[in-house]
Image (cartoon, rainbow, N blue to C red; front, side, top):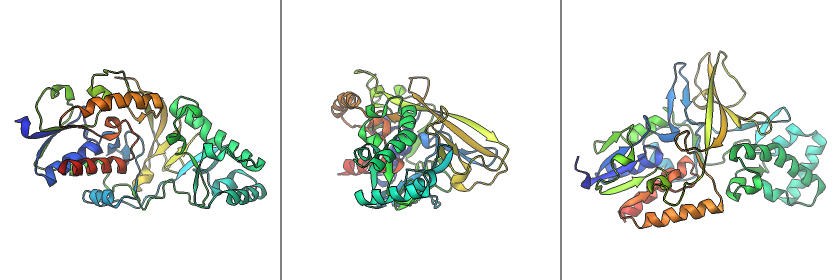
Length: 372
């Protein structure tokens, strides 16, 4: 292959697949996309097991967006069902809704006390608003202080400690803002206009994106094999510190370990995702057949354990948002800016937490920037 007229895309997850598709389809350019994994779709990889259940290998992935451009782009490759994600949490042995909302209030407290708390909340905050838990703790009223402390301990404190391995006050505000009190009776985890699961799964979406005569895919392939070759452009969705051989040190990540179990019953739990903030060492249990309404006499669950990322042992999942980590990333970013025709994107390339729609939008906007 003559590489000088070929784009190299490193990583066949959504970020890499979108940029590869746009280059090949809109510009008619040749693209070589490589991935060190033995499959496409990155951490969104899913597959049907022997029970006919669509398994999300790396944890549940729920698509949601308010972005019309992203929705229309993805609709070229898939239809979505109308699944709207709800999360159940076990608080004091009671299954209830997370984020904590008015329905949760009445599930865990006596009616009269719940009614009093609801009125006080509405006296202070707007209905249908989400109040970050750490902001919520600043109220003077004794009842609201009690509620804030309850939510903080039962939902936030232990779960956050398990997930991030640090105390909540050591976690960036961007993380704490993801655990709000929702002044609503809306039990959905997301309120976006567009929500759902691709009807044939996420892997099939990426497969269709890469089904183009201008795209060549090579799996089980490391970037080191191509690092010295002269490509037209390089789009790198791997970890930016790895690209630069950890010149300034390793960027910290949290990883996740999933323990899969098959059970001889139709359902294991009452919901696709059940959180255990205060019990057990795992953070939550996923039950996959809920997402596409798969029918089987058996069911498959995955218990999710959060752990530190260790190179060569596990996968990078979540960039850890702390000032010193941002400063380290910015050192690599400065090095990246000095490179000609090398672009970094995706959760690892940008060292930023992206939902699927944000990763897709980032790739689309990068493509538009190149075309200008």
